[in-house]
Structures are given as C-alpha cells and as structure tokens.
Length: 270
Ligand SMILES: Cc1cc2nc3c(=O)[nH]c(=O)nc-3n(C[C@H](O)[C@H](O)[C@H](O)COP(=O)(O)OP(=O)(O)OC[C@H]3O[C@@H](n4cnc5c(N)ncnc54)[C@H](O)[C@@H]3O)c2cc1C
Image (cartoon, rainbow, N blue to C red; front, top):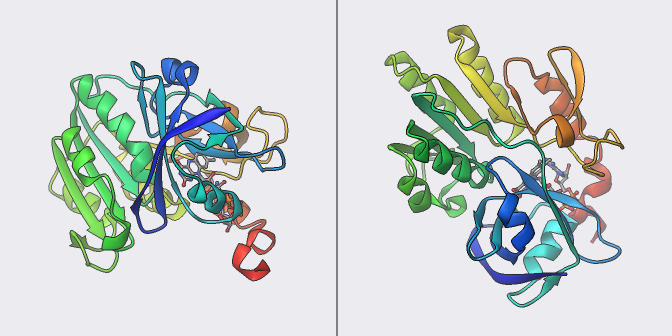
C-alpha cells in the first residue's frame, strides 16, 4: 500500500498527488513513469513521475481527469492509500550536455517536462521551455518551470493567458530568428508532438517525443502500447516512452488512441 502524503488541485481537472514511495524515488529518473492501481478491481494506469524527492522518499504525480480511474484518483484525499504503484518504468530520458535545448510541453505534458528541464539545467545546458495550455484555468507549474529554465514562454489556445496560439507558433518564431537548439524534447498530446516534429524536420533538429500510447501490462507482453517508429514496431512501455519524433508514425498513434473512446466514454454511461 502506498500512502498519499499530499493531494490538491493544481488547475481545472488537474491534480497533484504526493506519494510515499521510497524505493521508487531512490531510482526514479526524468522521463520514467509508474503504473498505478487504486484498488483490487481497478485498472492499471501509467502516470509520469513528475517530481521525486529522494531524501523524503516521495514521488509526485500530476494527472488530468479524463475517465473512470483518473476521476477516482481525483476523489482520494491526503492520508488515503493506493493499492499498487509499480516503477520506475520505461527508459529514462537521455540527459547530456547538448548546449542549447528547447522543451515543449502541452497541457498535462508540462508535468513530464519539468524533471527533464531540471536535469538538463543541472547538467549545464541553456534551457528554453515553451509551455502551452487550452486556457488560463488549465495553467499550472509556471513558477516551478521558471526555476529550471533560462527562458520560458507560455501560450494558451484562446489567449486568456500568455501568448494566444499554440506552442508551435513560438517554436516557429524562435527557429525563424535562428535560435536553433541541438535538441528539442516535446511532450503533450500526440497532435502537438506531431506538429513539433513536422516543424523541426526540414531543419534537421533532433526532436525527442514521449509517447502516451494506450498501455495495459507495461511489461512488454500485451502489445497494447505498440507504436510504429522508422517502419518498425516498438512497445512504448519497454522501448520508450522516448522516441525520435521524426521517425514516429503519429497518424497510427492518433488512430490507436481512439480505439476504445466509445467504450471508455464515462459520461455516456452515467
Ligand atoms: C507513459 C505514459 C505516461 C502518462 N503520464 C501521464 C501523466 O503524467 N498524467 C496524466 O494525466 N496522464 C498520463 N498518461 C495518460 C494516462 O495514463 C491516461 O489518461 C489514463 O490511463 C486514463 O485513464 P482513465 O481510466 O481515467 O480514462 P479512460 O476511461 O481509460 O479513458 C478516458 C479517455 O482518455 C483517453 N485515454 C486513455 N488513455 C490515454 C492515453 N494514454 N493517452 C491519451 N488519451 C488516453 C481515452 O481514449 C478516453 O477518451 C500517460 C500515459 C502514458 C502511456
């Protein structure tokens, strides 16, 4: 059993949960995730380790309420327990001294970008981040991101906060102004990662994306999280979640993310 040390709402439909998990926090690296199961009959869901504090023995998760399990998780309180937290899973993001790096985070993806930005900054890179949200009510971790970046841009689709538009608008401007990084890390909705990869492809800027394919076993056995990268099939859980964005078949990923939309539509079943 894993104790919830703290839990609060960060923004609309967006929650922070701090969990006592000393063994996981001792090993966690940026880019890795855990598999959470709330109770015996519950489904297993993957959530990125958004922060870890080795001295405290804790990990932090940030999640958006989208369906049954994330809604149940949102209803839990400080002092409650989770049945299983399995991890750290997945390969860590490659942290190196690249020089200039740009991180692009979309919506809940900002939480996954944070530990990568911090590690890249600690390594000595010049870190620029572009974070985008649907609107002001979804904005979270602006100040936290500011602490681990040299330059931070914020966008909202409707212009209710920061610059109006998409993260790719800022990225386009930076590249046009000849601010070319050695590498870009993009984490967010598949359509956003696809747009970033298409934008950087003609400039040959290395673009790493973290794929959020549907996942069931997370042990490389069931194949639910399979993705096509460079014409070959890979499992996000074992081979990823980071992949070369220029090689990912995003259209297939987007199609597969929709596979169970009707069955999982919680509001239709109420
Ligand atoms: C490696 C990895 C890390 C992730 N990290 C985070 C995280 O840090 N925070 C977070 O909020 N979410 C994260 N996700 C997505 C998260 O796992 C899903 O949102 C969650 O499983 C949905 O469960 P549910 O029962 O609430 O919704 P469901 O009832 O299963 O689904 C509700 C709706 O969400 C869609 N959905 C389900 N799973 C995904 C998915 N993987 N990607 C996109 N849409 C999905 C469904 O198609 C459906 O429309 C991650 C996914 C992966 C693969």
